Image 1 (tube, rainbow, N blue to C red):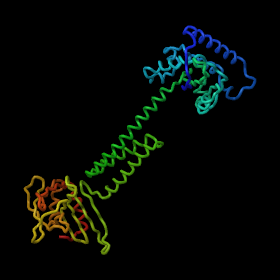
Image 2: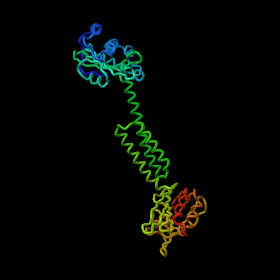
Image 3: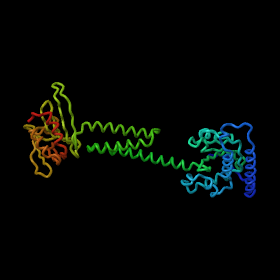
Image 4: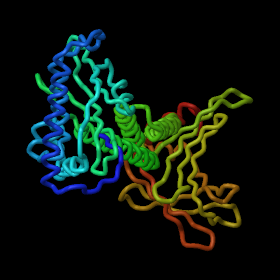
Length: 402
């Protein structure tokens, strides 16, 4: 219900106002009762469809609802139950405060229209009109109605008050909009919850991808996408989050295409000169960002090397790196190999033997200690889960390598 703003002042004692309100209401109701008893010379189709008893009922309900002498109990009898169920503790008292600013109620011509949209337009015009929406499942009978009443404030200034009615069973009740507002708030809370959960899923999926837990990341993003489908497409915020989910899934797809299993990734290409398939399988270490075990078949030649972000120390005589390694809780053993030209990797001696050794320890941890130039040795940690699968890809490309 909306009301124009007007100044109010006291013009008489409360007793005189009470008598005046009662007299005005009685006289006005009597006048409108007489008006509806006499048929109009020319009746429109909409007027013929509307029952006169419904018109009189709506007029009476409007006067009772807008009566300055109304009480909380009388308003409760008029308001739709759905609105009462969600009403705040002070909702009725606020309605009563509005009534106390009115000094008289005047109705003009009453007319039923076909749509609620017309009802909204009519409520914004100076004329006194009543409109109703028709329920297509109820034989065209009105299911909602809006009654615009011209009222006067205590300072005698005019204002328009609009009352919305809704059918509740076989009777009419006043629709205050409280239930609709509560439903809108609930939808907004649900929408906000879905958006926040989707954003959290994107962040969690990113963290899972860093740990090579791609199936879990994919499942989270799929769930986020499905939940966003329940909140509609008409808001920029929803579209923005949906776009972020799509981008995250696309990025995840690129990672999945290179993934073997565990923390293993692969890269394959054809040699441009020989058309021989080159295959590289890389095991990403834990902790240090650049720690990596690489198994490579390039132009039919097999290599196995461990790289680090540190500059490795080596013998000045032959550029050989000497370190140590251990599988799980087994005793540590010596590790040797040539240092790479960038000083950050050691190429393991006898790579074919290393492939067999790594395959035999699939699923175990592998710890490597390498000397660092002018610093303490660095320790690299690897999880060999999936080693057999990764090694099979490389070995297939280099079947004759020793």
